Image (cartoon, rainbow, N blue to C red; front, side, top):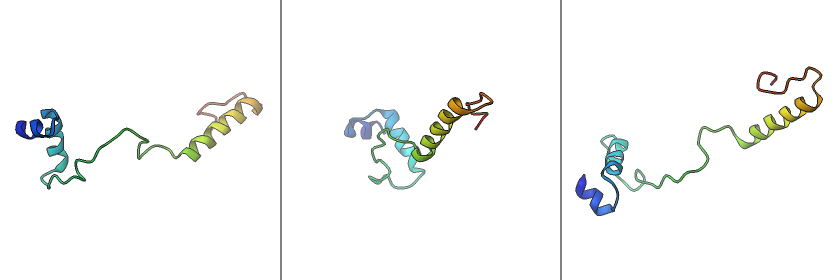
Length: 73
């Protein structure tokens, strides 16, 4: 694994991560794909987030109970 790390100019721990992630399968380019930061796959969809923000704003401005946080929703 040290030789592979030197060959690809990455750290030993990165190679170890690749091997663990492969779970005994081939280390194809798809397995080693770049994992750039971005929107998480399990994040709430943007439309739902916008709806929650709008609802909180409406509750804050118009609610007679004065509730506008997560409990009110």
